Length: 116
Image (tube, rainbow, N blue to C red; front, top):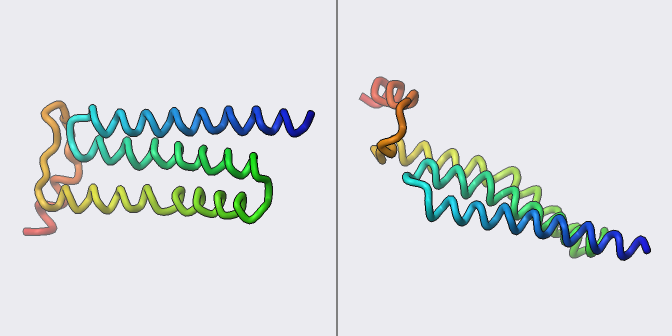
């Protein structure tokens, strides 16, 4: 009985994680500029991958595979947003433009004054 409940919970968490991965992929394809795309892939993709790793932990328990899965999930939670921020900052500093619908560019003022 408990094993069946854990399998159902694991499958639900896996489906939620896969939904987030799908939304991140859709955002990568549909969003207009590099900044929006990085936001979709870093935030949504991180949640999706963590959901998949959490599902593995629930299914496998605290075996070596489950502990590795949660370690990978935590590593992704810590590194993906930082990496996306650094890529976005580098793209902005090198002059990659915002999409036409963007109205506010707060970083543009500080980068123009600090780099010139």
